[in-house]
Image (cartoon, rainbow, N blue to C red; front, top):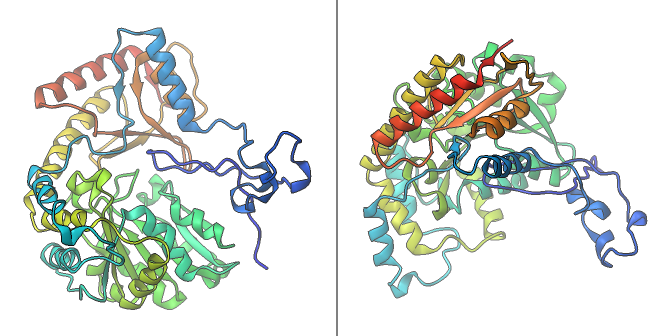
Length: 442
């Protein structure tokens, strides 16, 4: 039997965070007012204590702080740098294809494991942008956004007692599902002193022996770090030596700012050890369309496809065909990259003038910067969460705190601004309010 994990109050929101506090409840402590099935909930989501958690998750605290700020200062606009999704609609050309395809009778049915048009477009995309040659029939399969892929891949590999190694801070879905299967998560902290790369040399041998999966994410969310070819080469060598599978999250790959976007599968030998997961959301303004693809070693893609075949019936065919048209138009991600690069340059300049220690990130639309420790007037912040709440309530500036590996704030450049003049006005207002805040750093 594998180790049992009990979780209470599972929840997910658009900030991509799960709430998974521990529970020690049993069916014997259900109250008389509980429904008869209270004791039947699975241990993985809290067992008999499911739905009874009272812990306030950090994003609920942010929402409460925003409500308070609006109530206390109804005439003050919130400057929202906490939004974690693109601010624009999908390109007009993509929406036109969708409009045409939605009315075709042949697109009405189940897609199951995907249509050839989307897989072929994904193969062309990988060849054109990264020089990676893939067989669309055996080495690519679509997913209904990248999130389900991270939920399904652990099902392909994890048995009780197995380990998934994951970077923190990071996207937690693969770890959540690893625990669902009785596995464990070994956290790889992303620290400034290591250039926000995991220290692969510090991992104990006994962890490597039990590791089935290593989940990476570059360009990294939320740190904005990109990695060198040498880092990926080291990962490939370790995967072969220690015998684990690599899953590379490439959701932000088309938002690379410090050079040509790099695919993990470009690395010699990478195709032998893992897969890469791509998303249409960030690079193509297709957040709500829920499209992505898994590509790489054909046996891993096959396993993913088998699990997927028992989990969903595929994305709507018209959506896949519209997404295929998007993948074939390189001007779309180029325009989106240029917009977010411009906004990021403005934000970095503004924050540096206000005392923040930050530089232009290698990629993503997130800026990850050390949280202030207090203010000149005497407030102190024990964690990024405290600084976030203060900035929202007192100055109407919304950020997202990350306290997993040091105290940091995440600023997103996905705020709504229709023109560059509006961007500049937002930066000017941000500079004024942060100046009034009188922040200090220890």
